Length: 158
Image 1: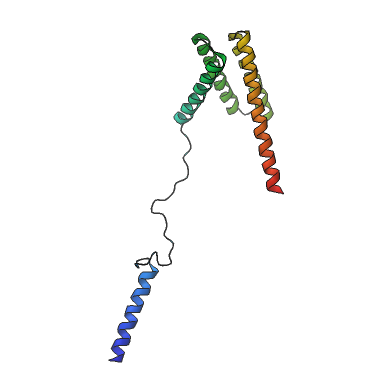
Image 2: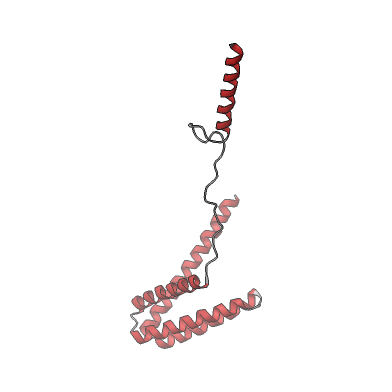
């Protein structure tokens, strides 16, 4: 009788340890790390349509800001928007060309200067002043961001 009890006890003990090993026990995952049932795929690269929508959204936001700040009329708004769209397309073309970074930088700088001149030609004197102030504020905010990044890197290195 003792032999029968010993065999039954060992069978029961083996079955409990086997279910615990494979996560079928009622007390949790049984010491086995469960993986996510849905495998995570790497982030998808944005499609051309997504990039175009994002670019148009940014241009529209910029135009709303310019319209409010400079009190543009509809003709000015359309002309300036067309100039900005053409400028962004030219910048994209330059970025795709096989130039050195310095050449690309110079080309983009000249495109931006030409765009600024054209935009200024559509504005009256008071609007030009406001436009210059907006550009200066934007430049200052970029400088501030660069300083903050530099300070953050310095504190991380210390």
